[in-house]
Image 1 (cartoon, helix red, strand yellow):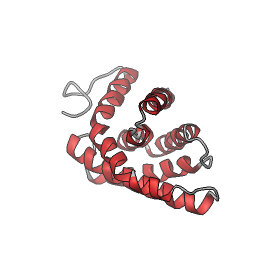
Image 2 (cartoon, rainbow, N blue to C red):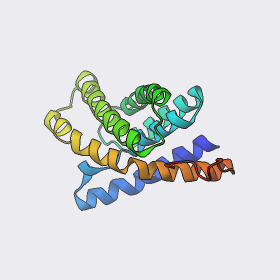
Image 3 (cartoon, one colour):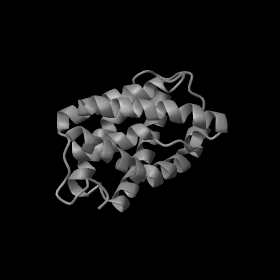
Image 4 (cartoon, rainbow, N blue to C red):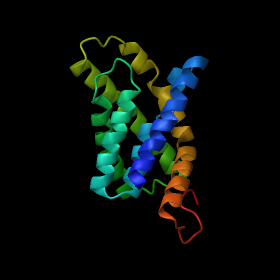
Amino acid sequence: MRYVVLTVLVFLLLAVQAPVLQVLGLSAWSLDVGLLTVIYLATTSPRLPGFVTAAVIGFVVDSFTPGGVLGMYTEIMGIMYLVAMGLAARVHLLRPLPLVIAAFVCSLVSTLLFFLFSILFDRNFSQYSVVILWAAPHALVTALLGPLLFRLLGVVDERLRGRRSADGGILLR
C-alpha cells in the first residue's frame, strides 16, 4: 500500500507541477519529483520493492514527457535507484546537507543519462543544447527543494505506517 500511495503522490505532484510551470513559462525550473522520490525510496525501502516502485515511478515520469521515448525514464530511475542505494549505504541521506549534495549529483547524472539515451535511441532528438544548458539550473532547483519534498514524503510515509520514530519524527532531525 505504501508504494502505491507514493506512486500516486508522484503522479499528483507531476500533474500539478507540469501545467503550472508551463503557464508561467518556467518549465526548465521544474523540480525532479520522480528522482527525489526514488532517492527517498532507496533510503527507506528494501531492495526489490523499492526498485520495482522506482521503475513504476519512471514510467509515470515517462507519461509526463511528451514526445520522449517510452521507457527512457523507467531505465533512468532504475539506475538512479541503484546509485542512490549505494549512496544511502555510505551517507545518511535523511539529513539536509547530504541530501542536497546527493540530489544535485543525482540530478546531473540523470540528465546526462537522458542525454546519452536520447542520442542512442531517439532519432528525432535535436535539443542537445537545451538539455545541457538547463541541466545545472534544474539540478540546483531539485537539490534545494529536495529536503522539503523529503519532509512531505516522510509525513505521508509516517501516516501510512501509523507510527512515529523514537525521536518524534522521521526526517531532518
